Image 1 (cartoon, rainbow, N blue to C red):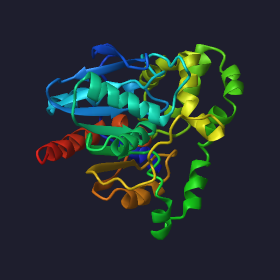
Image 2 (cartoon, helix red, strand yellow; image 1 turned 180 degrees about the horizontal axis):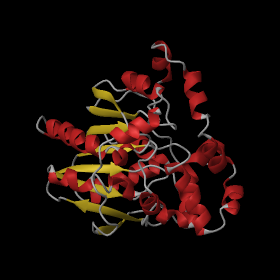
Image 3 (cartoon, rainbow, N blue to C red; image 1 turned 30 degrees about the horizontal axis):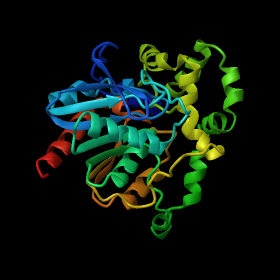
Image 4 (cartoon, helix red, strand yellow; image 1 turned 90 degrees about the vertical axis):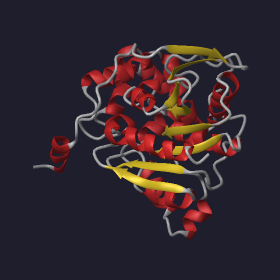
Length: 326
């Protein structure tokens, strides 16, 4: 019996996926003129902002929204600008700090929250860290998983972490998407000339590229996740952050050069082939007030979906404990 087969047999069934229209989609226009689409459920509970990454939209949280509402939270789930159902930037502005400022304006200025808890992986995790540092006191607690840890390089070296090995993992067997999306987006876009081809590019990341643990996304799940990506403009918006490493400019640099001191719950998907296991050791250094990292079996890069049975109650317990102390 293969290890993969063993894991597939023993992985518990996950919560059923709500239909695409299960939640009301709200829309608000930011001061920049960009319209953000978002789910907001459980109004009146402690506010939790759930931030998606790439190749995701707010749909990656579909298995998490209602359980967190049932646990007493106001759950706010936006699409980043240019993603999912959100509007595009008229100035082609897509970068980490812009996303961070968008999220602050939505939750603080528009929805009226003086504080939030933030949950984020992949690009959303990096945006969350910038929010922690940029808007002091606004983010009271953080859940952070499967993404780029803060860039406290000297501290990592002092802890004996091999920075070269981290880069080697990033450039490993799943890393060509960074080069293609970041370095040759026009060539790649020309190859992905139809909605079906664009969706197939994204579908591979939920399937054979092994971002996910094998078997955690059915064909129906992948169809659900890829539907928003059939549009070329949305695909290009999703690629923008990768182009920052290939000459694309950003108006501001994200604040990633310091440790995170607020209470943080850390997860890592044991089968993640995008973010290597040195993520665990880096997080042990970069987060000074942490629970974890908790390594989740049977989950890869999309662990909030793949192991919602673990993710939902653990996140709920962490933020319930946190809010009782603030």
